[in-house]
Amino acid sequence: MLGNMTLINSSALILAAAGSVTDLRSRRIPNRLVVVGLVLGAALNARAAGLAGVGSSLAGGSLGLALFLPIFLLGGMGGGDVKLMAALGSMVGPMGIVRIALAAALAGGLLALMAAWWSGRLLSTLNGIAALLWLWWCAGIRPSPDLKLGNPSALKIPYALPIAAGTLFVALGRWS
Image (tube, rainbow, N blue to C red; front, side, top):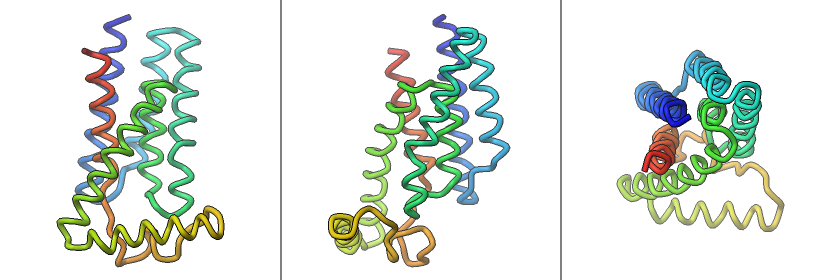
């Protein structure tokens, strides 16, 4: 069983690293990379635990999709990042993808703050976050006209990097 977990975690790290490289180079995560991750996740989990492993793979993939899909629908994340989370979820299962999502959220927040500071836009970024929270408080959760990927002046980060950091954090935790 330990060998299967090592193979699954190693595969998840390789997938997350490949997603980061493509996201950094082209700001896209190719569908073929995601499909390979989904298929590999199902196959590795089937090998590790049979039909229960396939169920865990499907549950993890579905949860990975569900966790980040609302952010995509609100205009705050690209679709490739959401699909990458689904592929990683198919590898690490439901509990693993929740851990990756939490670690990625922390890493993404830090990366966004560093990018805002580096670009000299930290104060305007914090004001934008406050305005978004105020909009959601007053009008309910909905897309902001200013704070979304479609806005050319919005600060953008390649979110596959925080996803890879979260994947590394989870893998190291399992290996230690």
